[in-house]
Length: 223
Image (cartoon, rainbow, N blue to C red; front, top):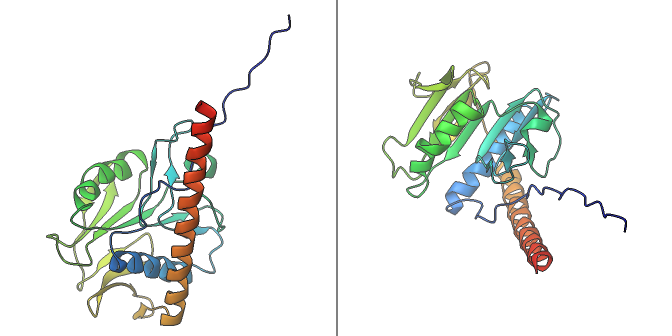
């Protein structure tokens, strides 16, 4: 009797964790606007990838080892659309991360996420911002020194980002990006913001449906 050779099971790295895109409309819109501004700023750089709310997998063969920063930037990788981000295939981890915090998330932002970004992913700059001002302090910036974060200091009311070549600060009560080379704020047109927000909502709904389908297929397979 010929022995059957069984192939190794295919490891699936989901494109969504099924969680909401953001805490509130304010959090979501800020995330979308910030991603858009960074994309516009680096639009001529072919090796700068800007994204957010995308699952980053950081250990091959372990689909549970993932994290989804609100906003992140990676230098040295191709600028293209991705379903998820596999660090072992890309060869780079994020250089910049921004988490848009809330009362529900800030303990993770300041605890497990901060430790993961520093010691595992080696994120050079990490910022936490609370748009509702419910957390004290509501805006914190860290720069990586070896495997530990050192808290940044404000300069002229803003955090200078050496990685981005920009400064993060509030303009008219809203978190923005200031370009010290042009002495101007980076501001997207409102029409484009609305388009981006709508598109993100549609993508989020599609990803949630895809995740439900994956879970259904897994349940049928197990049965």
